[in-house]
Length: 69
Image 1 (tube, rainbow, N blue to C red):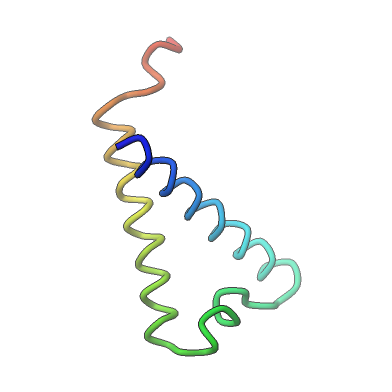
Image 2 (cartoon, helix red, strand yellow):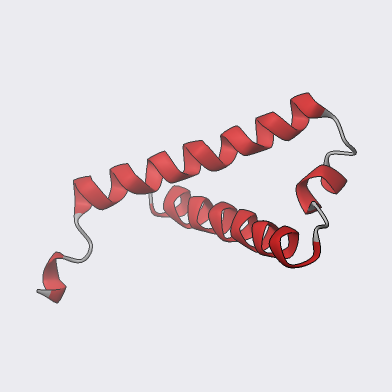
């Protein structure tokens, strides 16, 4: 479970960096990685959605910030 959470964090950080590059330069890194294939593009976007849902579940179920109170 810890490995899954770390992998989801890495996926979301990578997508965030790609979005930052796109916002600053106009170059779509994800489109370049998928060679313009719309199905592969959407599949990778859904991977980001699944990673975000997993981290949301993890934050609700395990409450890692509870000891910080």
